[in-house]
Amino acid sequence: MSEPDRAAVRAALTAQRIETPSWAYANSGTRFKVFAQAGVPRTPEEKLDDAARVHEHTGVAPTVALHIPWDKVEDYGALASYAKERGLGLGTVNSNVFQDDDYKLGSVTHPDAAVRRKALGHLLECVDIMDATGSRDLKLWFADGTNYPGQDDIRARQDRLAEALTAVRDRLGEGQRMLLEYKFFEPAFYTTDVPDWGTAYAHCLKLGPKAQVVVDTGHHAPGTNIEFIVALLLREGKLGGFDFNSRFYADDDLMVGAADPFQLFRIMCEVIRGGGMDDAAGIAFMLDQCHNIEPKIPAIIRSVMNVQEATAKALLVDRGALESAQLSGDVLGANAVLMDAYNTDVRPLLAQVREESGRDADPVAAYHRSGWAQRITEERKGGQQAGWGA
Ligand code: AOS
Ligand code: ZN
Ligand code: ZN
Image (cartoon, rainbow, N blue to C red; front, side, top):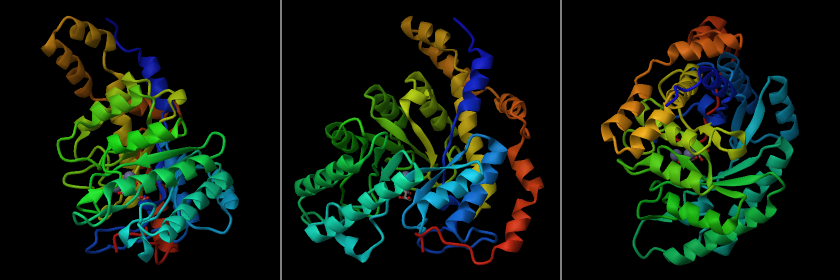
């Protein structure tokens, strides 16, 4: 039985990378109302300026996920250079085949081949953008589905989906991947074409090594054991990454670790157990959140810290003690090992990790002291809306 090596834990926390989403910096809301905030970015470049502040104070958020067309620019190479000058990189490219009138009955699964061609064209354009930005991953979330029994043929829609995914796979270059995201409902309410990990896994398995499943923590029915899904996908080599957020009811997109920090800890335990923290595993740890009523940049910093805290606790699990309790059938002992780690206050450890890399122990306080919030409130008028929720 061995206590986790503290230096190794600190090294793992220093090496951790969490990608922030460009849309989290912009105005967002529910379908009832978007509450505009002061100082919100007006351009993709200003979103990067804000992301650079998050990275400066946390040290673990060096990439930003783009959403096309919300982050449409003339020159993506120039945007990548803009990011680089601020110590950032452009991350996952998120496609959008859900905000066009043509997609009322679906995008790549639409019964009309012309609409399917249009949707596929957008996905291929996203790969062109990845070539220019140097992004590794294309994230595919489809709003496709039906609202009424009999509305369309469930099997034919799977065939159309497979055809589009195959075309995207064939277009991907060396080192590029496609991450297929599932969600059990919304905006479709009867069938969803990629409703669960099993459907995503079945498609990705046929597509081969360039296709991986992405787990959005808000995309499951209440009570779903997400860490089991994580363990299984990792074991099969098919976990591509996470969209982290919190849910109380549906796809709430609240700050990760806010609703259920224990669930986040359990997920990170399975990530670590499956070797998912190693670079070789290629897991993309992304946030997919909206900050509708809270100030955005401090909320994103807080979210990054929540992932760090869950990771630190999971790293502190005494794996030797856990295994020996498990193998001897010591139910309570095994559970106690996990709970000991979860109940550890890891804030001093994370403060030490930050100070060791020359950062303030308290990133939120450092941000508030920096004057950035006052500066953007003064300089930016008429911030951009993320693109949905109007
Ligand atoms: C939608 O519910 C999904 O979570 C998407 O990953 C994402 O929120 C959207 O595509 C924004 O890019
Ligand atoms: Zn998502
Ligand atoms: Zn979602």
